[in-house]
Figure 1 (cartoon, rainbow, N blue to C red):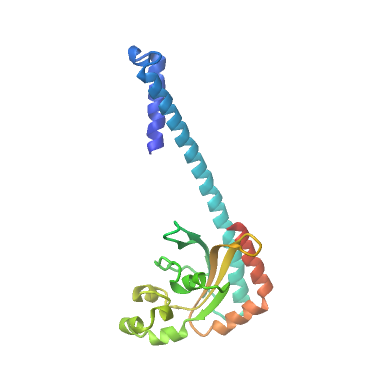
Figure 2 (figure 1 turned 45 degrees about the horizontal axis):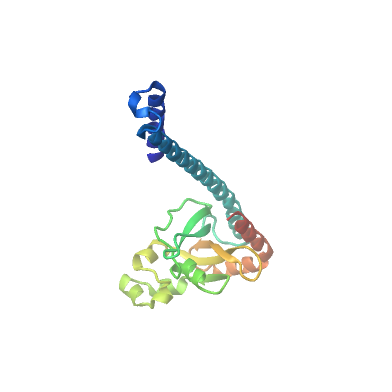
Length: 237
């Protein structure tokens, strides 16, 4: 909006100078000439910034679209190799975002074989299975939520559980996603060598309980395929 206003003002000022309206304002060395130059510079900078922002958004949208492919391949792999019901598997790619004092996970891509409402939770370091894997030294972790679900019979019972054992979640946050009985998370890195940079996470969630062993088996048996798809996510992310 501001850039559009600057461009409009610059256009009006240019027309005024060409038509010499008012004549004394556009004389050489006067304020008008200085204002025209300033408006031109500001409009140019604004236009350049918007062009760069649009290109960045387009590149990001393209990357998000390509990230759906490995998510889909992992979901189909799990459903082809297990007895987990169709539609119960969701795969997501998350990017670590935000300023250094307020880092969070931002969803970049998701694939689920049936539509589902996304959890309205801001995942931060230490919160949820995602956040706890982020805060740990492990490169991946699998959590069976059956035991927590058995103890969380009410809000008061849930809040009585130590915070770390309930993944530092509130009752409302837990209740919004308690139908996910098994969650697997893997870290996504950028760079090679001894100190690659953590860029994000890939998560798999399974609706319902009693599927932890099946998921563990397929991740082990098809480990090379899964690692290849994780590498694809890292390259795109």
